[in-house]
Length: 194
Image 1 (cartoon, rainbow, N blue to C red):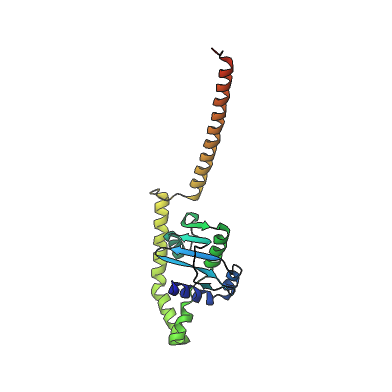
Image 2 (image 1 turned 135 degrees about the horizontal axis):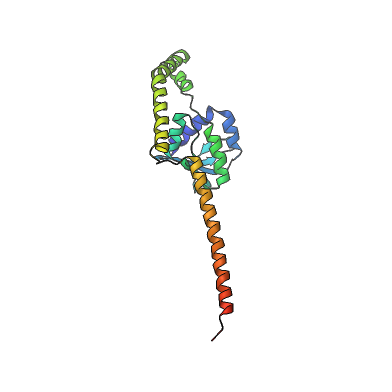
């Protein structure tokens, strides 16, 4: 767990403004899970994460769809993020963590120097530039295929329409139950006792 907390704190070190926002939740125990990784700790007064005992007050469970959304440049679907415990705290921590991005060039420059780090960055971007763009397009097409052609993934408007239809059906069933109860009362009142 110590290595994971150290890696998370390293990311926080690259983003002082994010660390300042996290410090507003000092003393709160949080956890972030993206299988197989699990990170848990308590927020310090300086905005770092420290190891702690006990269950977290809030947990963000991220599904792998979040990583796919990040790769494709899209917002993650709400169904890919599960908030547990104090949902208000989990939501706020999610907003804060979302702003973290690793600056690999800065880390590499400490090892090989600034010039070499920027050359490596340029090389990697060139190497993955067209491949990354093709991969992103393939991912977008695959997701669209799953939503449109093979309806394995539901579109947001379809889900919203389904939820509305379920709510209307529930209300109709409640009204029907009330009508049946009223009819049974009237029938019982008309039937003479023997």
